[in-house]
Length: 125
Image (cartoon, rainbow, N blue to C red; front, side, top):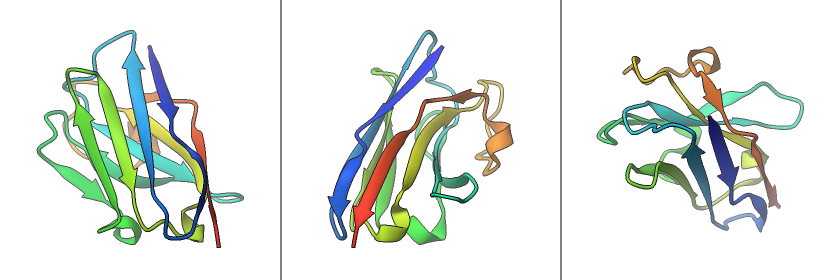
């Protein structure tokens, strides 16, 4: 089972990036999936979460109105569209999935069973 995240890079403040997370080895069509991030020297934190059918989402206040999570169930892929990026968004971004038996949009990293390798997003001021 693999979650492969990509799309990170260096972008100026106010810019945009789109992260992708492709799943392989099993289907995550019914799994809650999320993006977490870990800024330099800080703990991992939740960014945004999406339900198995895509009908429900959660986003941390600091990214509301700027970041959008979506999923393509047929492609087994989750996306994170990030607009109006700020230097404080600089972090390694991880995609993750819960076991298929769970439905709640947990904000705790310990609730997630499958993790990608992370992709670095750097926002210059």
